[in-house]
Length: 278
Ligand SMILES: Cc1cc2nc3c(=O)[nH]c(=O)nc-3n(C[C@H](O)[C@H](O)[C@H](O)COP(=O)(O)OP(=O)(O)OC[C@H]3O[C@@H](n4cnc5c(N)ncnc54)[C@H](O)[C@@H]3O)c2cc1C
Ligand code: FES
Image: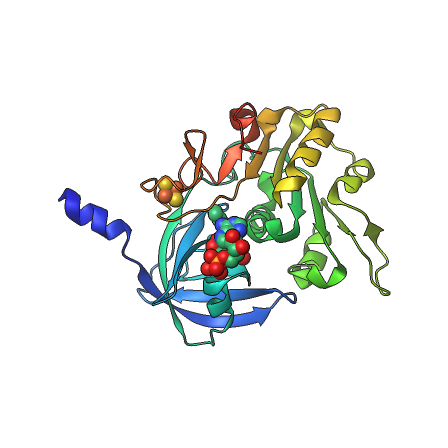
């Protein structure tokens, strides 16, 4: 019985690419459909292990909100062998999927009834999109919403068509910035933390979700501390090299914590004292 269970956790199920669109020069959005016809059953913040036969497997965040259908979306940056091969997929091609795995943003618990601050830096937008879309489709259950988004250049804005729609929803304030503008950019220029001075929110009634490149966390957390926000109300998602995704191999350890099971979403107050976490 134990042996079968152990084998099962490494056994991917198949899914088919049903839509693929280019998001930026380096990222594509894939819509996959589980061949079983079942829903993936994820919640915002979780990831799945995606595999291609003969090439390998990698953890990828689920970027769509839960909706009970057998389809789900992923935004994938082309960096190496697996993600390169995924970028060469066509509609109708098959992949392997294990998951969903990991912890979730607290959309049904700590975030309920609160104002929400989303801090989406670079491809941090990919996992946060699932939470943003969840919150917008349950709009009445949350207070005011601030969405801060920052990218290197305007060409790297992810889900730019959706950003515009989100900014039009009642009670939602969307602010964007880029590190380097192009000729057509009329918005803010500077790193994402420069947007904090442009918004006002009640730190006692706000839950912040922050996802982005490792270097950004320290500065974003310092800004929130200056605004007297408690780290108990701040959630981050940490990326670590992963293999099994299910707490068996130890590859993703952060001082005794397993990023694949204790994370990837952590309440920051729980890891603020953990060396090498941020
Ligand atoms: C929980 C989690 C969620 C993720 N979500 C997404 C997502 O939504 N979209 C997305 O595009 N990527 C995501 N990633 C990163 C993704 O897993 C890696 O880019 C992928 O494993 C690279 O595989 P590869 O075979 O293409 O690259 P490889 O050929 O293995 O490596 C190419 C280069 O990328 C570096 N690299 C490999 N893996 C990682 C990693 N995990 N983190 C940082 N650098 C790495 C290598 O050091 C090397 O320099 C996530 C990672 C984690 C842990
Ligand atoms: S990836 Fe194997 S223990 Fe986390």
